[in-house]
Image (cartoon, rainbow, N blue to C red; front, top):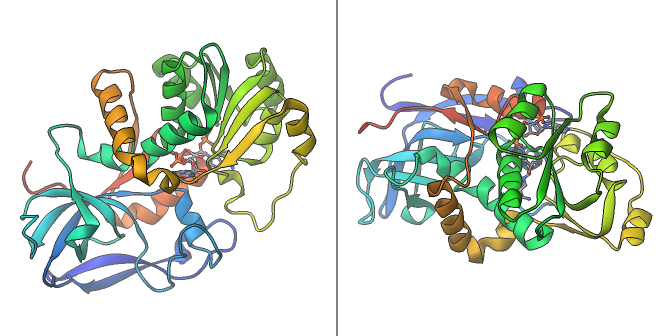
Length: 339
Ligand code: NDP
């Protein structure tokens, strides 16, 4: 690599099942030249997210698929390396949906300035960014937890799930988290103050969940789908609300089937609703303000798992499907020039 070139990660092929390293292609390209009203962003942190698996398939969705042999895109925090925009100058820190690349040239409209003095820059990819907002709107608009109710969240020790449980606690609910390791169970109970936490990988999972949710389940925030969700459904209370946020257990499956849920829902008069965080874009400013306030007041806390090195982005992404992360999974690519 010369000083004038940079690395990008392209989608080399559309994966069947779990992606492998062959799904990705590292491509060396010239550092892009910016036009009028564009900025050149030097990548500092890359967010790796489960939803990206869906974009690797050529299928109809709420967001278009990644194109083959082009850079994968996602949440990035970066530093302005060069600017042809009056709104930005070199050294400004920004967040945007940018290439998995060391440098991206984009319109000034595609990035937003962030202030490192208010909160660590990485929070804009997690608790104050897309994942925090997903927890906030899915729980408060669909789940609507009331004081004394029982809220169950799956994927509980991840980026979205850990925020869901804490917000539910703030609303006075009793919170049960479901996660895949003893370390995560300890984190949920001891650090985040969840009332109960259950490991879905143990043979005793269904019994453990039943015991933890002795009063039944009023709100279920579902991040994982599959058998975990089947188990929660047997415990629904009358008028339960189910926020369908993600189904990571099926993202790498060609086909998935399960129990039919209709009669369970009829019997409990339950309400189930899928959503994407983009449904709430008109209200993002309010959500971000509330999350920022709770963070500043110490009512909300967050964890990050940070993998180092641009070359480790694909492996970090694959780690999501093995539960390698506690909280938000990020890859650190570079330090800012101004520390
Ligand atoms: P996480 O930080 O929660 O990371 C993914 C976690 O999923 C892993 O750490 C792992 O934890 C768990 N997991 C992986 N495979 C399985 C499996 N087969 N069964 C059960 N759990 C599994 O990711 P995010 O917080 O970013 O996302 C959580 C969910 O929310 C995802 O499904 C994602 O697609 C969805 N999402 C939806 C959005 C929307 O707008 N609707 C926006 C953002 C995210 P463990 O060790 O516990 O297994």
